[in-house]
Every structure is written in C-alpha cells, then in structure tokens.
Amino acid sequence: MTNFQIISSAMIRCICLFDITPDGSDQHYQLQRRNWNTVLQTLSIRSSLILYTKPKKIWREVENLGLGINHNGYHNLWIFDFDLTDKAAVGMDSDPIYHLKQDADYIPMITGLNETVKFAKKYLRQNCPEQNISFLYPFDADK
Image (cartoon, rainbow, N blue to C red; front, side):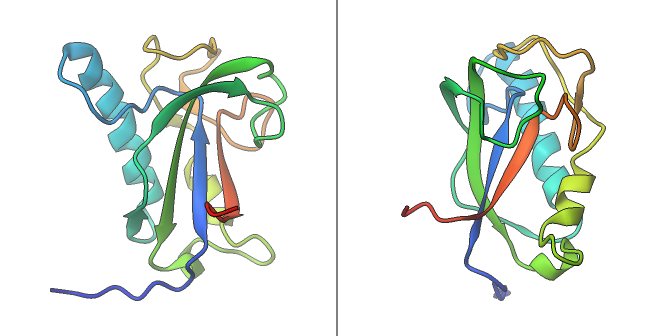
C-alpha cells in the first residue's frame, strides 16, 4: 500500500451552486453524480485529492462566500471539504490554490437538478460576476 505525504493539514472547503449530490439511486441522481464526478476529476488534475466530507446540500445566504456578485440571497449550496497531497502543484506566487481555481473555470455542468440559481451558462465559473464555485483556504473545520 502506498502512503501519501500530506504537505499541509489545512483543509480546503468547496462551495458550489451546481447540484453535486453524490448519493442516490434514480435517474435524477445519475445526473447529479455526473456533476460530482466532474468536480472530483477537475480538482484532481494536478494532485491527488483527499476527501474529508461528501457534498452536503444546505440552504443559506450566499453573501461573503466568494461567489459571484450576480448571485445574492438564499440558495441551495453544496459544500464539501478536501485536501490535496501536493499543494505546491496548485499554488502560484502568493495564492496557494491559484491553479486549482483556474482549473475550475469553464468546465461544463448539468443543470436543471436541485439548483436554485438560474445559470446563463452551464459551466463552472471563477473570477467573474457569475462565479458559481469557490474555495475557502485555509479552512479549519474546528473553528
């Protein structure tokens, strides 16, 4: 069995406005699972992912969560926590997760599931008014 060395124990929290529900059994679930697989594969492009929690759907105000200014009010959010075995592979200069955020831009997603946001474009978006996925880092779940 291979042991991975974790460079940093600080978790990353992902907040997503797309339905990435990982569990279920009907055809609707299959579409949700495709979104979840897309997010997992996107986050694992540069480093192995260590998943601490599966996505959990919550209803809350989206202000101050790093999402785009075009999203306001209360919405369904999917939140999960993870880490990477090699954060050096995703960092650049003063932003330790720069490439992670860049990788999660313009990735096609399936809509019309349990989202409460109406998306103009069916893509994960970063660094724009339509930003619909954000990463909180460092994130300490004990705080």
